[in-house]
Length: 230
Image 1: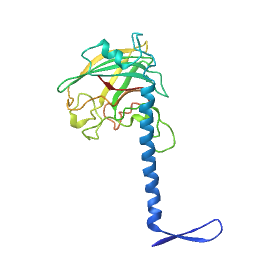
Image 2: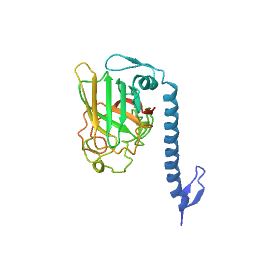
Image 3: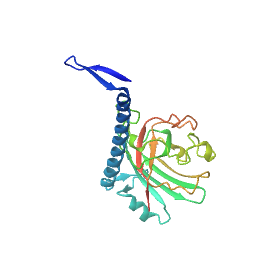
Image 4: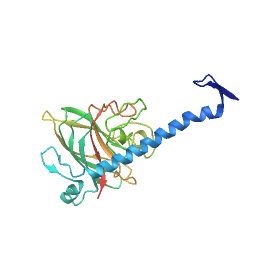
């Protein structure tokens, strides 16, 4: 089977139908390859700018994740959160990994008062990227979707059974009227066989409803940091 096209000179061109079907597939593959390159470049950008100062809720200046490790000898992983292209959130997030639980310590500033969705995302990248193919660059789009190593394809609360949530679903953090939040919480339903490092931690502009897939309707990422291990 073949399909006819007409060139600008009026000459009829006959192309195999199979070739016409391959062209869209090639475009899809090229877009996927471009996304992979963008993520790799974003990781490189993060490695280059780890020296930028970040201020936590207490106003303490941090110039690198290694500072957090020096400050806490029991820390397993940590991230410096920086503003996304749509936000202003910054600060620190610390992780203590236990056998079947995860303790998270959050110290953020420059957020709107209220509840903010707080999640671990798949990729160790925080730059903008076109995540849905509409030609628009989404803030922190390079971080991709929620970390879901068990492939549950369910969004839920951190207290839910692991089969009913993404492992990266950490719920909400509540920001005070001064735009800061300092809190420590423990996720009791967490599979300790998985490491949080080499992913991104993302804070969103709005509240996570803890059920709507894929992100609880929590809005735009306003802060993001790559989680690094000790």
